[in-house]
Amino acid sequence: MAEIQKLLSQCREDIFARPLDELVMTLRPARGVVSRLWAAMFSPNFRRAVKDLRGLCPAGRIPPARALALAESAKTQLDDWWVVTSAQVRPKWSADYEALVTAWSGVAADLNELVGAFPLRRFEDLQFSALGKWLQDLAADAATPSQLLRLQGIERSLADLGLAPVFADIRLRTPAAESWPDLLRYAWLASSIEEILSEVVRELGFFRRGSRIVEAVRAAIESVGENARPR
Image 1: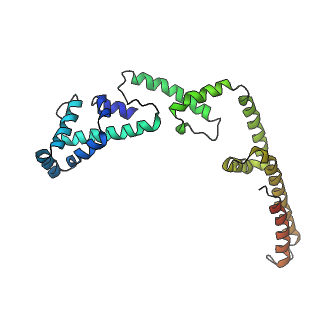
Image 2 (image 1 turned 45 degrees about the horizontal axis):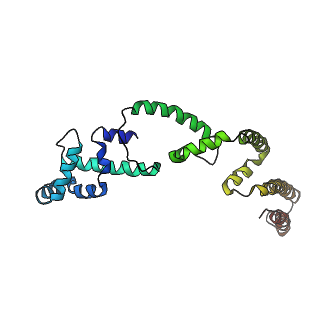
Image 3 (image 1 turned 90 degrees about the horizontal axis):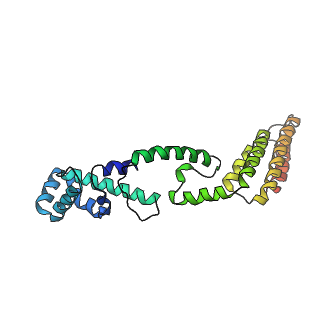
């Protein structure tokens, strides 16, 4: 929005209604001295495009290179605009821009704190077109907030017991909730097996490391864990 407002301080908002792809292509010779002079003399489309951009700017007689820069900036801003809005409305100048920015800063801070309660969401990914419905759905949901607080407390308690990697894996793979008890049981079993392996290696320390006996015992214990892994 800041870049759009900056652009519209230099030219009228009608620039966003122009065929910007075509304008940029037509004005491209303005990048070089020779190509600019050649186009100014022999290309009526080039002269028409420069005149069109000059008519949109309060400064009036801007040089061709400046006209090209404005067309390129407008194209970039409009492309970005269509990414963040679903409404078929082009950008417009706003005399209340500074007040809107100040108001939005407070809203953005609250939203950023709110999004922090949802690990799979990022503030940068919020779409304005869907934001209203999401907030309405949250306001209408009276059960989930208390459940989230309770779940976060349970997660912290289990993380203190060494289960943080399990929750990281659940967030990464997003398995069905019905399988979570099996995942927790497997995590407990895997931890127990790791402890048993360490003990076995200590007890069989008189055998050469990597010997058949040590490796056979290790393989047998690990196979128990592998067979118990949730599918």
